[in-house]
Image (tube, rainbow, N blue to C red; front, side):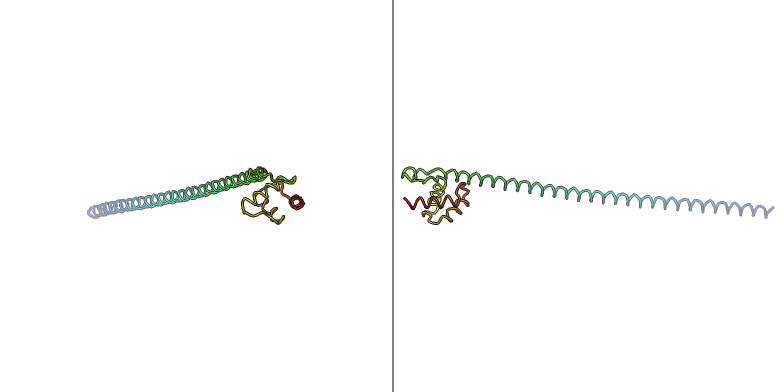
Length: 165
């Protein structure tokens, strides 16, 4: 009976030890699961943070690209406006050059049948203060100032008519 009692006590102690071991094992597994869950949460948070950083970089790059495009458009528009302004000024000068000046009309200058060449000659005289003696120079000057209708042949004829005067 004593041996049976000891056997029962030993089994009871074994069962308690097994329960204690199982309890400790269960707690260890819970701690590992908890640690794994925390690690997974930290990794997920890091992925989200990296994603936000990438999104911010992309948005900044897009904003910079849009700014550059806008600046290029503005620059092109300014250049276009300047070009139009220069063309209008040249056209106005050409119109002014093709019309005889008030001084030329008052002095009774003859255009020898070439009013545009005569206007270019007057503009040359007004700008440079010297009468042009070289037909090539007058043609180049008229071209530079945007005065239409001043060809080499018409300038030569104008000079020839002027000499016969």
